[in-house]
Image (cartoon, rainbow, N blue to C red):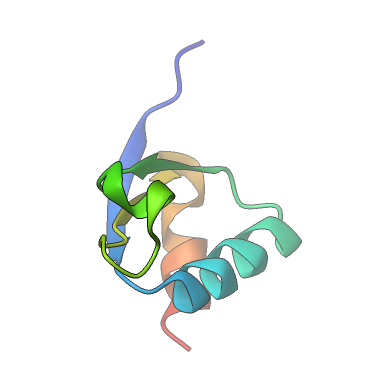
Length: 70
């Protein structure tokens, strides 16, 4: 069965992204991420930008929205 994932948010700061993903993982929320950062960041982290989209499974979307809104 193919799961449907819904866009939740975009993170531009690594620390906030890590906090969100740790919270989702600890609460057994089904999610996936899409890396949108530039390749330049991997060579020189301070010169690039950080951008990752968080998508959450349709079944867990309400629960995740409540957790991340706190």
